[in-house]
Image 1 (cartoon, rainbow, N blue to C red):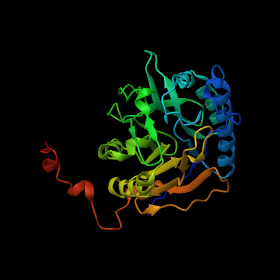
Image 2: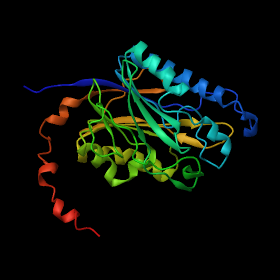
Image 3: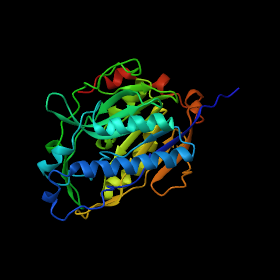
Image 4: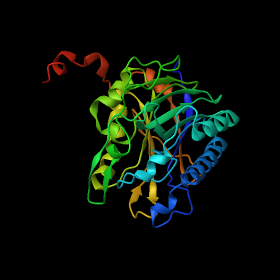
Length: 311
């Protein structure tokens, strides 16, 4: 008998919700709490909308508590960083998760205890408990035909100190995998998705569903966005939920193409959402334990001795 483990998954596709973004960003000095509060309130409402559609787990977009500020260098935004365990965003989302009985993957701007800052996703269970966090491993710095980005100015690469606990089943400190009530969940943030070892590491550590929150733009990025997740899901026997911003954010004119979707080993899943800022899909994790319909058995047939000899 074929087993099924269907989980309704939601991801957001939205943008900065603060309604009063000034042309001169210096006017936000001392007012970043209002930016954060507006975005958290917006996302709690999206949680409610996703729950109303039957979602058991939701993933927010990268750095969802504010606009994407890495388009330039401005130390103003350091003030948006907060504690990943006791900060206001995690506190509010823990309460909302418990109220709605919903698992949340919440990517925030983290202020580390030693003064470092990180691009971090916090995983909260349906009882409001923090299961752990993932710190973004790879940071981009460059430019394309639309704009530039300088993430190392704002935060550090992961130090592998994501924390441990009974929910984290991974032995790799850089790539935690969290046992949740719906399945084993991993995270790969934006630029991480381009590196060949990320999804393979998460799969090796037992991930079944990977959330990939992103803020991405440009022609090549848009083309690869439609390819990378689908190939990795098939190659590593995973479901991947990719969330990208959509629209542009004042005072910058940089557009984000959105195109968020959920894919699995057999391709992109139908979007069941009734809300313009959400993508909702039914994920059958039971598929991952069945024989591959292609007849392939990649884990059995891989020749590790060849790859280990690469210089």
